[in-house]
Amino acid sequence: MIIRFLINEFHPVPFSLLVRIASNEAPVYHRAPTLILLLMDRRGVSSPPMDVGICGQNMVLAAHSMGAGACWIGMIKLLMFYPKWRSLFGIHYPYKLTDCIAVGWSKFPADGQVHREMQHVQWFDDKKNYNNFRVEAQGGKPNEVSEAE
Image 1 (cartoon, helix red, strand yellow):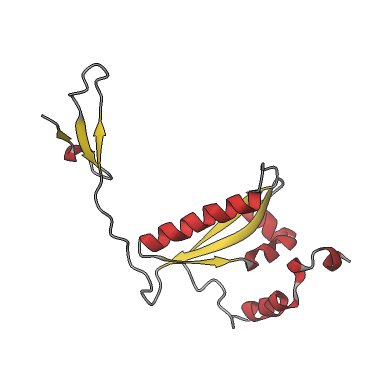
Image 2 (spheres, rainbow, N blue to C red):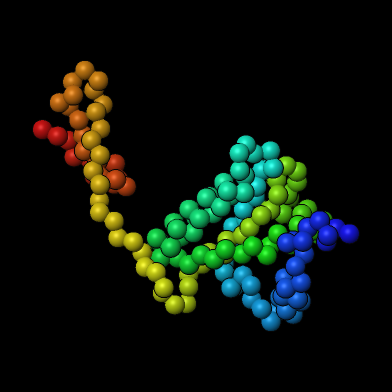
């Protein structure tokens, strides 16, 4: 009866894949050392699923820009139908596990680290004297600050 209401949640393909995952025939998490679980707050305003997607995509882009590999794993939400896994992860109402991102170092370098130009920021510490400012490189260490003349 529940299958009738949650058609997309109980598609036969994931269930046949679950059997292969359980027998270690399909490494769905790509043996990644890190899994990021994306939780959605059901009380969220506007569109919580889109917010989760935006958050996750930013994590994937950040990982790729640092040279790491990241992969969306949507099948993890099937685990939430088992109370054992919900309690193991400590997920209770109003939160719902929606997706997972596997992060690690890929075997094949598909992307590389994105080289960025160093940006300089002018800081005006003295509100009365705007000629007194300091220039700091973005991401620079505190001892790399150069004072303007």
